[in-house]
Image 1: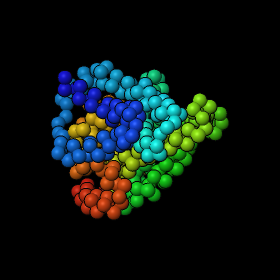
Image 2: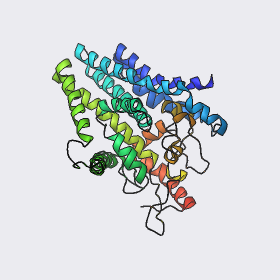
Image 3: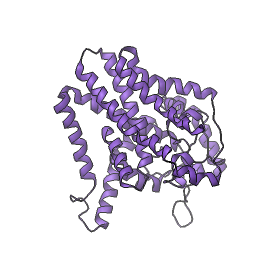
Image 4: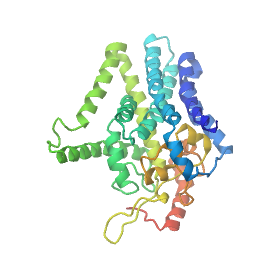
Length: 353
């Protein structure tokens, strides 16, 4: 019964459904739940550092319940997207309602869409990877499945990784750098993979082309079905979705760097190269993403068996609260820089790669 706690993860998407249906001030309900209520709860509910017994891990990894909790987000997110577009097409909304609905939908596209795509994109089955791409589509981030798996996990916590934020780097500068350079990196990785397969690096076999085509067709479908005036709303919601991902990227590895060995190679990724949080609600809502060190230790380890490491640096706030703090750079630097310095001295990490 204790595993039913993961159903709490549906509280944010269901709050968005309610907000889209009711309108008015409820249009912002998704934002209120995700970034007001949850951070407030986490101030008082810290969570636990307990891990599952090794003998239990294999059994939990095979339980279909945990997979179904993920899979059900695919129809739910597309239902929310369609409801969002339907409400806009119906007209009669105040400007503040359209803003609230767009923000709340964007939160779902990022917090549930991209986050669950991140989990499923590390799976080996074709149908799970297909679902991952479906979840990335409305945020125009289908290239993430290439860059994250083959770029970020290789270069994490080095200056070669666009998605690893640097010490004293402003989050808004990071948004631009990570978004642009991750896209460039995805093309480079895809070109290398295509070339190794014996095809022209930037020829039609390059997997980035289908992503561009599918995402373009998605916007064209929105325009033809809903009207071209609705397309900007779909674009903004998608941008908010991938910016939410980048905001998570920003806090996950802020200021943490891997050292180089005598051979000039980077040391293996270790638990102290990721910021972690055991705050219970954030762990559930983000499907254990906050136990990020173990994810980098073994990327295909399923979310329900991710572990806490005593030597992984811990955020005093949960991920949702830390994300809000990061949006105010002076406060973020004042709060986190001393903790980065403490971690750097404790683990003998360089300031820059």
